[in-house]
Length: 132
Length: 294
Image (cartoon, rainbow over all chains, first blue to last red):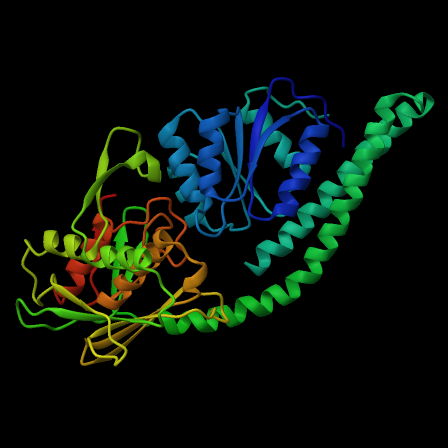
């Protein structure tokens, strides 16, 4: 799979698993997406969003202390137009409905496939499908 | 949680493969420019990828012991959450509560500070203020990510001030509002605060144990560990939290609250929700849920 560059897309990655956050960052940077910040809980997400106003937020749901629900809710309160892609292993309808009601742009389920991630990012950034 | 970690490892594998593929492609296209400084950058990135692969293997190995730790942690928290009350805010955060004190109106609670002599007067002053202060502050809700800027909430620096404010609303059981502080080595008083220099083997900074009977607290003992290395302000925060337990509160699931299991908030003061929890507890409303508006 190959991807073309995503010009002018900035993102923040929030995941309490630092290894996976690092891998995401590395891969997105290689694909031309600017990762302006990496955080490890929902509070980091809010702080980084306030600081950088990225085009897209990639936000894990299950995190200790300040979880993804918290981060999503607060980011949407700060900016109702924020594009937040939620990442979770929880496939229950309850979680899906809760995330939707809080204003998640889309949900990606773990384990994450690269196509899913890029489709979500391109849709969130309103670029259409840019992978080939 | 276990499933999530396994999925994370699988996601890492997928993305590391993708990174390798992409780097191989870039390497092939830049081989003929071996002396180009950009190729050096690629080698540096490759090293990073190898480092990440190593990290993921280590995390896989570590996850085995992590699961062991989690299972023992779960056993411990099972004990801590034997509670009767739940206080919940709009986000679904709960403040579980234990038993309450059952005092005659206007009765005072005697708090005895057992100081091994190591704690300086400024630390003792801060500790007492966390109990006796009636100072009130207003904090913008946006600082605690509760709302957009503009609205504020009231916080109390000391439990006496918070409880006096609350006591304007009648409750079934009398809420203690007056405290007498002693410094005696003999262990008298309903609430004892032990200031010790040793560290807790589980890493706790504070610990509260209450003895109860017939749903009422008879005696609470607070231990503050490693007091030598704590500042006056840190001691005040820990005492403020532990004193909440001594009054009957358990932990809050709201991470920004003083009563969160791990005090991580920048504003570790007694919140309106903590007071709502106390009100419910002393109103005898068993198995109740109180919804905090913030």
